[in-house]
Length: 193
Image 1 (tube, one colour):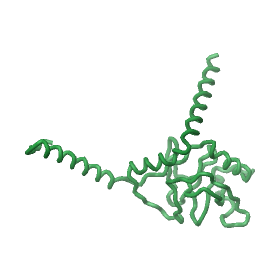
Image 2: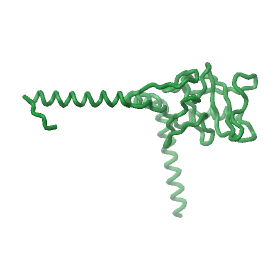
Image 3: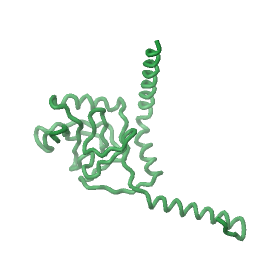
Image 4: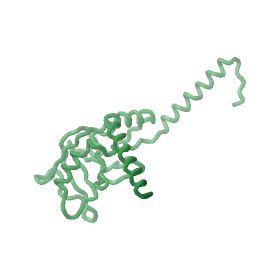
């Protein structure tokens, strides 16, 4: 900028004001951020084992969805979510590879399996509808009664949500990454021999 300022203080204050204005505009222009999917860790294994017990034998399901207090998870009207390395918009959580659910409370949820070419098996709120226990609540999720939610979350707020979400699992994630790296190194060593 080729403006002339009366003093150094005026120049500094003008620079600070431009930065504040840019930050304010950036926050106003932001799009809603998709929730980040939980990474798989050993904390999810009891849920996976429970799901295997109620897994339909034929045909093999592509995924599952959950229901509690009138809300379906993932939200069928806004299913976009960030999974490691991708953005997906499926109306169900993937079974293979297992995608942990994003729900606002840990507890018992009704379960519905999704099978390709068939759709969802067993309707919700029936006597034969299976249930499963979800062990981890997601700070980014909430009950929505299946309406589209358009919360505008700033980048710093979204990053705080993600950190809060992953903090309890950090040790498990690091241990799993170290084991995976060791397994890759061992496989490469075996190839060389």
